[in-house]
Amino acid sequence: MVNFFWNIMVKKRHSLIFLLVIFFTQISIASDDDVVKIDLHIKDHKFTPEVVELPADKKVNITVYNDDPTIEEFESLDLKREKIVLGNSSIKIVLAPLAPGEYKFFGDFHQESAQGKIIVIGKNEDA
Amino acid sequence: MLKIAIIIFRECLEIALLLGVILASTTHIKNSRLYVITGAMTGIVLASIFAFFIRTVTAVYGTYGDAIFDSGVILLTTFIISWTVVWMQGYTQKIKTNLGKLAEKITTNNASKALLVAIVAATIFREGAEIILLIYGVSSASLSASEYIIGLIIGSVSGFIVGIVIYTGLIKLAGKYIFKISTILLILIAAGLASEAAGILTSVGAIEIYRETLWDTSWLIDNNSTVGKLLHITIGYDSKPNGMQIIFYCCSIIFTLIMIKIRTLLTKGKYA
Picture 1 (cartoon, helix red, strand yellow):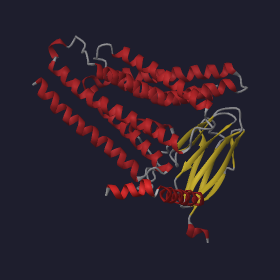
Picture 2 (picture 1 turned 90 degrees about the vertical axis):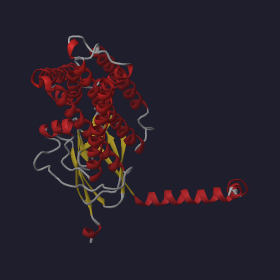
Picture 3 (picture 1 turned 90 degrees about the horizontal axis):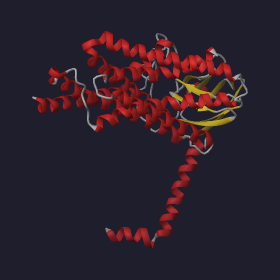
Picture 4 (picture 1 turned 45 degrees about the vertical axis):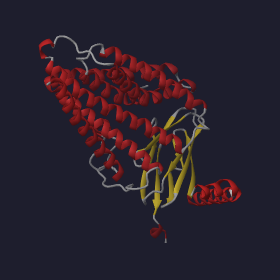
């Protein structure tokens, strides 16, 4: 048994590294395919776009850019997330695949204007 | 001005509520105020460091990692609160057995002192970093500073007053039931935090099972309404909870109750 591992770890190190490389490239390729990237901008305490449509069953990477000089907090009770966005900077939010439906989000410090929502469309409804 | 006051007030509310309950339930402990103040100072320092850190390296600071960090801090707070509750049960036993010398304040061991400091520090840290960033953001923006400072003062003072009201209210109204009431409150606060952590973990994808929303009561009490916010802090109300949140919530309560049972049995043995 020990010999077996010794063989793999030392003598066949190159093949092991090769396999690992393949393994990780597979993962990164697979995850790249399943991720939807979305940009949200905050300007004058308003989101653009205010309504975002997303497919179901895909991971989502949201980048929130705060183009205002004032601080904001990106918050969504439906997504169960909140995160501070400093003035003139950006944050990223990673979301696991969402079920079809509506998810509201807002800027916690300017709720009267900073409102938006994500609409997740199911595969069946698409056709 | 009013807007910033409301925001600061909202951020202070959670601190005020938890500290009010903690202070009310530890009045019998010698020097408890001192430990609370130490905890508050530690929390403020940690929050400042954290706020500074997040401000300078915000671009490097990850996406997935900080969601995990957030939920880690929340779960740690849950754990510390539960631990405090369990420890409190032991010392009600002490009070009962020391009835003769009730006037004398109870001295506690170092672990409990550290616990008291930790719970306050954790509470302040969680909300404090946000307040500090908010103040920083305000001071860097080209906006009328004096209005913001007045708003800040109004917000924090009214938050402070709510804390005092909760504290005196608990002391006056609860009377001899103060331990029971604060125990129940703290257990529910801890469970609510556990559920919040579960919400983040399922949202970011760290937990991939039981992610489906179980029910929706937002038509009755919306999460973002004042009542919803208050219920969220006190009993962990969420209008659209998922399965994992319910599991975390129940596990937190069950775990604390079991620990209380064990603790009571142990102290009973010691003082009988």
